Length: 313
Ligand code: PEP
Image (tube, rainbow, N blue to C red; front, side, top):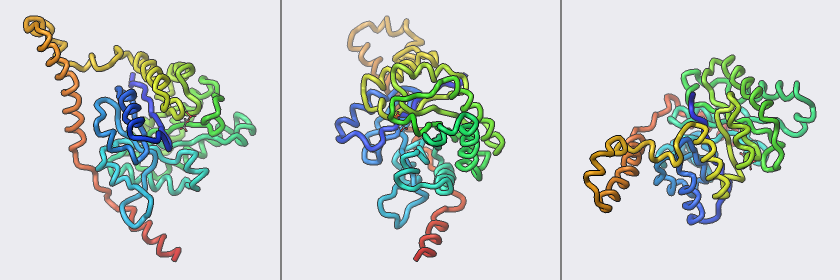
């Protein structure tokens, strides 16, 4: 069984580097992606277990004031990016077309993408049948044109807009069915093995109800990811469910497989040294991974953007 994951979406929070540092420390656990604001991404370079994520990514470098591109994010150590969050669609007018373009560019640069979809309150009121139709439409509109070879790097976050930040959550078994529908719709586009997350008012009390659903591969957590006690508990519940002994660090210690030698060494000082190896090993692995050169896109989306900017003039 593949492990469930938690994506922490900090949105436009927190206010200071100190707070961000504290949150990074608390959430730095296996199977976690931390989607921090651009401002704090450099602090995430110190992560040992969690993966660094971003909340949006522009197509490419250039004269696009205020934007940050996938190319830049890769250089900054980012591995995953959230695209098409409902707040970007509603407040910043992002369209499906732009989101697909951003997704293609991000995938070309080697990022994993987390594409958000979800029905509005009005669509919810129109009923379950409509919700199913909306889901199929959203998946088709947000994923069409993405090459099947990229399937392994695509996650769809199903976030009913009415559940985001409201404290209201849908029935987990309904969400399981919707996750199944999202996967089968993605498959109809040739995209096999797409992961599906649930997002919307997840907290430490309801997270296990969603995590226990077989078709739900993890959770996108907004508000609760900013509260230390809440996010620590959510991650702990998830990793216990994944079968990891908590804290997971002990599972990866190679020294632990040779306890006899350590006992012979004996002194407290040596014990401290062993502890050091514990953190060093994964850090080294991470550094090696990050050193891999980013994929260059075959065809830069930059030219397209440039053209459309010129046309507008
Ligand atoms: C979100 O906006 O992605 C989200 C899930 O928010 P919240 O958990 O606060 O509802």
